[in-house]
Image (cartoon, rainbow, N blue to C red; front, side):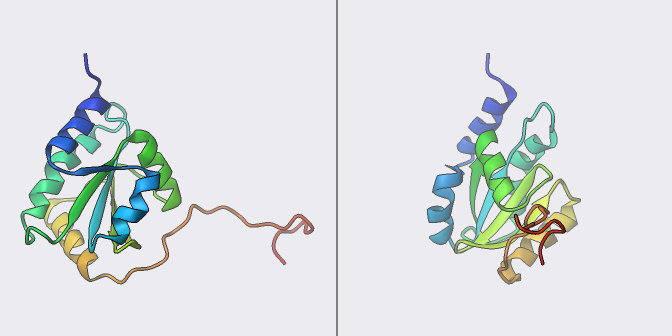
Length: 146
């Protein structure tokens, strides 16, 4: 009997999307003008990740066929990639342009909003990815950074 995570990954593979992990992401992203990475979570705990399997292909029909390339990550890879890009909410769509961070769509959105968000990512400038707020302190300073 298959589990929900396996079913999710099989549906993504059947859609023609490419599997990535933390090691294969950078080479793929660097060679891709506009890459969307579908970051997943446990579909039992976060059933909305299953919605993205249906939503993303539908949204992509609103754009020329070669506008975006889509990849997906399994649960362990999604966690590693999310940590790197400061993503805390799932499901998440990570947008990269030739390896550079553009932005994310975290959670689900209403139809007009998500189509608009995809379009915005095409013209948004690349930028430094956000990080998870970790305070920086010095070993020699009791009050933190001087």
